[in-house]
Amino acid sequence: MARIVMKFGGTSMAGTERIRRVAQIVRKQAAGGNEVAVVVSAMAGETDRLVNFAREAHALYDPAEYDVVVASGEQVTSGLLALTLQSLGQKARSWLGWQLPVRTIEAHAKARVDSIDGEALLASMAEGTIAVIPGFQGMSAEGRVTTMGRGGSDTSAVAVAAAVGADRCDIYTDVDGVYTTDPRIVAKARKLKAVTYEEMLELASVGAKVLQTRSVSLAMKEGVRIQVLSSFVDDSATPADDLPGTLIVSEDEMERMVEEGLMERKLVTGIAHDKNEAKIILTRVPDKPGAVAEIFGPLAEASINVDMIIQNVGRDKGETDVTFTIPQTDLARAQALLEDKREAIGYNRIITDSHIAKISVVGVGMKSHAGVASDMFRALAERGINIQAITTSEIKVSVMIDEDETELAVRVLHTAYGLDAESEPA
Image (cartoon, rainbow, N blue to C red; front, side, top):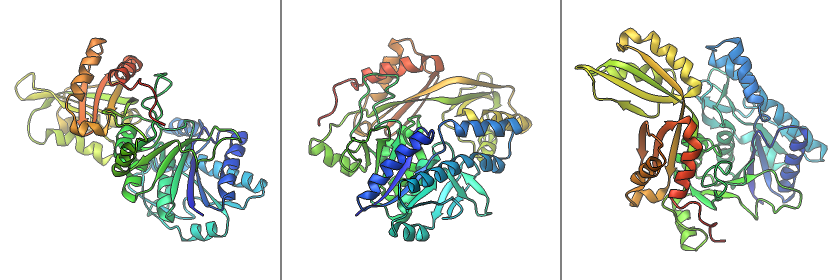
């Protein structure tokens, strides 16, 4: 008998027929004698609908009230799945974020899981009752509803798995694993047997939509074993226990898999892209100590994450231009904040551009091999793709380009790094 946490995304929960299919998958897992908890997302498109309602009500909305609105989507699907399981003769009940409770810290709409009291949940699971938990939501220290940002249900699932000491956390989605890049852009993209926590963390942070960044970070910290699977399978499909999609594992386990010939080691593991970025340029910023702090301090206080940062060499004595990127969803708030701080910062103009994209190459193999960045720059240059900004880490190189060139850049780089090759060893 194993203790398993299963998570189903929005496309898996999009309508009563798909919810019934999910219930069949969950029932099969419980029929094997396993203790099961299920974390669910809102129906596909529902969160966007709720977000639009919040924006229509108030363009610069109160994040606490925004959370109240958008958290309702997962409450609906958790209740519907519990009801569907009951209709199949399975013991099941829903647990809302405040009932466990899932305690969170930090800002509304971007909350982080602090702790989960799993005692009542474990007792219920031990009695053979399937626990159905709405992802994405928790409770602040003040007792208010919080949400964890887009993809937050992944983090909820990993946190629940850690809290109950689960043997495995299965993330069911609309794809059957992690690919070398988006298969909708590159037909020759390959499904990977395994990815390290570190690689998945980088891929998630730069645009891969399979898992949320915080969920991978939490899994790495807590040692939660994850596998990514598709929920779009028929009744005769091989169970998840026997046919995993993509495993998210430690680097040590990855090395063992390579040594055993279960998969090959590539210099670059995958290519990710993200069109949800916006660029801000502040012109003629005073070139003096403390000027940059005046820009990024208020943004940090407002929980606006800044990614790429470029400070140009001053065109005129004592002045410089500062360029940086932020999530598109934060552009209006950031612009309003910076305009309010214009006198303190001392800049001349603020220029924004939301028609940009970030392209990233990721791979643990970069740690011991030089030339990955130069190969990237050369491949893009040969196709006339201009690079506007660059950022790097130990296992990642990212560039900012024009949004219209996103798909071309992904295809070019996928080929340049040999990722179009035949599938990995069986």
